[in-house]
Length: 453
Ligand SMILES: Nc1ncnc2c1ncn2[C@@H]1O[C@H](COP(=O)(O)OP(=O)(O)OP(=O)(O)O)[C@@H](O)[C@H]1O
Ligand SMILES: [Mg+2]
Image (tube, rainbow, N blue to C red):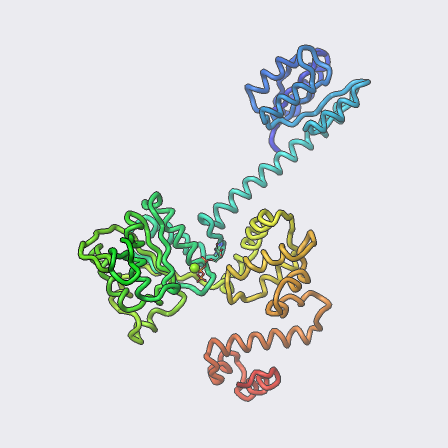
């Protein structure tokens, strides 16, 4: 508990003196005023924690004082002192934002209890603010949330690459936040005031993509009725983000390579060479190496793009991030849907058990759908079920009472078997070895769990 700054406003001298003496003996800081105007003046000058204020005062009464202090958004909490006949005013004062009131004559201990209550309340608030700041600082990086070591390491990389111009490629499964990271890299760097241009390479066929990127001259092809500036020109000075870079057709790959190497290109059907200064960020969920090996992606371009690779881990590999993501999405969708739902601990646990093939986006959708579809105040596992497909069901009904221990163990065993088998590409010799059981034993289990392929 901190030592509060207290202002006593009362026209009775004996009262000011006795009360302030006692409070000062406790090591608290006390200032006194004998009328409303003087009180207000002091309030303007200093940040008091507690104001002990008589309701009947000369020059400006306690109620007016309280109102004005509130309008000036003073942080001081008021305890109103009421005498006989002003109880009604005290109630009104509480409505106006006073914290408490005390009836005269009172025992000094009673007053001390009330002041302590305010100080405790304020300390809690301060601690909460600190925690909140701490949380924001440590667990998020410009909208990207993550307290896991893996995400913290990524924040560090983003911080570094945003300061330089090298090409970055962001690799990760669908919904892991590739678009978000690209955006943050741009916003953190020196190009932040220039354009961030997004190109979804998967959504346009080759020739269209070419003219979309590099623009075209009038009459370059049928339908090119006027000159068009491409996205590279629009992005000049800024950043261009190629989403699904693996889908870029060979023709465009060659032209892209030239922009990266020489910072220049010609519009489709044009002869004039155009110079640009653009930072390139790309993203893919495919293994570009495979595309390179199959001859679908130019190796030289691949090396140019992946100067700095950033691997975004799937959500299932950083489950400790799930609670803070839930909290953020709750906030976001409560606001959007004008609701005020919270989520129970067992629902959080159930959400943490799930593997999220669609990663953060899937979690985001789950929360949005649940908030939209349920009419409860607190989301419980059952509410997740009703808002979702059966996918997540498996992970939700593990609260005590729903499964026998044997069933639960069997389920866990089955899930683990699948995981190990997937990791070993269904190689049973390897899987048995990694599980520490014989091949025969593994075979029996696969049969029992209906997992024989
Ligand atoms: N670490 C994170 N913190 C907060 N929100 C996140 C995080 N990662 C992803 N999101 C949110 O999840 C959603 C999906 O992210 P994003 O679109 O960036 O993923 P993606 O990897 O580009 O997916 P896709 O491959 O399908 O394009 C977005 O709404 C994004 O804001
Ligand atoms: Mg994306």
